[in-house]
Length: 298
Image (cartoon, rainbow, N blue to C red; front, top):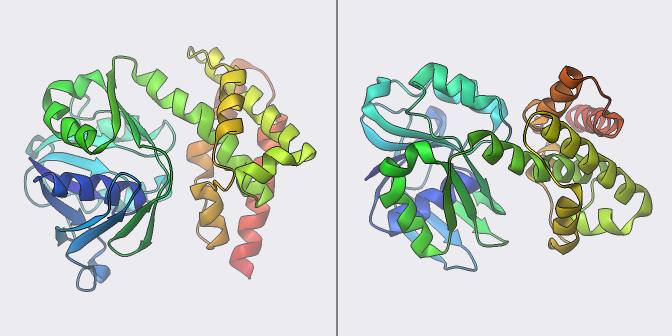
């Protein structure tokens, strides 16, 4: 199968590296100004295996592909899509692995409903340099909509053989809200605090904020039709590697724009729609906006 990776960061680089190692054809779509300097290979360091594998690089999607993996930050999605210049019918499946929920409707408007396969991934993968990916955490967990099972089963099986935990689910809304239920409290609290999750858990004030944020996202998800259990989410955080830091936290520290609308937006808008308040989430968002502005001024 031919794979195009739109967004060769931690997640895209991981999927691309594993797919290429399994014998798939992989093309990384990178910015035009970075095309000449980007290495024509991906190197992966992972508890599941470490290796380097050759790949192609291009600045735009101009040829047919079986799978277009969309793995950019939500803040970069509009700009990234300008590099996709093929007709939608030249793409077998479009698989977004973005944070948040709202990107699915945007992509389906562009590529067609059945071609876009909503999905989520849980992984601690980071691009430490162009073409160099480090996976520091648990076995990657990939959940995809059953709408893509026939088209994607062969590609997903190769990820599974490497060590991914993969499943197809018929409930697209549940796929997205389940991830958000864990991601929103984790990203917002660690970023606002500037602390890894272990220190958040140990600090009584920050633990209280974390618990409040979990309660709020659980209430909003449930009101939106996807029951989320706050105790299950908190138990997960209790067992998470204490040194874990969210990608939002890393973005703010690096002076990059945080994915606040993608991650906090569904919680804020869902609460407003259903008529209740989410003060902890609003407080964390305000704190992060302040930190981000200060980092950019500095």
